[in-house]
Length: 293
Image (cartoon, rainbow, N blue to C red; front, side, top):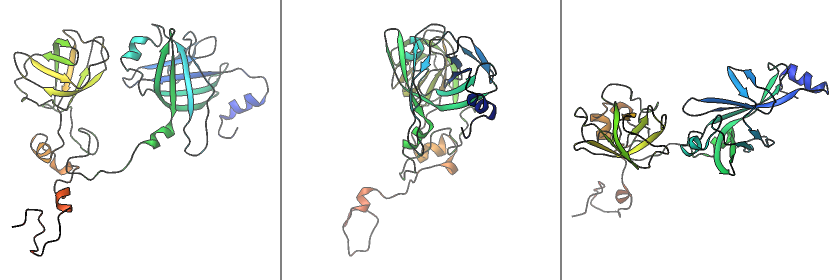
């Protein structure tokens, strides 16, 4: 039991145990939900772990090295705990999951058994099954820098450095109407056409609160029309408040003139194109990639 909480290890070694499992789910919108397979609620780390949720988990399969941990969480769809509308809206996509082995007589005696995220969720018969992905899953993602003319940073991240909360880079406004992936808002004379193209729409209240969408097109007219690449997975209603954040097309000119951020530009605007790399040798000595005369 190397690495176990000392008191919990002693409790397990006694041969007569009072242990159960507890799970905490932290959604990306900040909502934290606790569950346990004990017959009464438990509380620790500022979280109440409910016993009436009907949530259970299969045995964890954990390996050494870089192998991916596998498990599944299984539960009933209820309005009080995990409901179908929140799953449809994507509120549990990528949510953080922590699982403990706990002595329910003394919750200070506990040990983290699993930490990861929720992957694919399937539903059927009033229940759901959620794939749990361990921390090593992140090592399957491609890493490294891409050398290209356009900027490789994400607008507003540490490499970019732009403060998207600064005046001029966002606006909070109300929905006039919404249909599918199109949202109409009041005219915004302080923002040029296409200012929000490739930016982000964040819903601040209403049924879709906390959901985000990537802006495909920012048009003008009697109302300003915002088209998303994909419709939100919960309805928007007139009067709902949304936040629009400026977008970036990754070009050096945009970085310089729109965001005044040229020093942090993460692209290589002078990198030769494929036509330059593929030119045939020429005795003229000209290697600028232009046509030979």
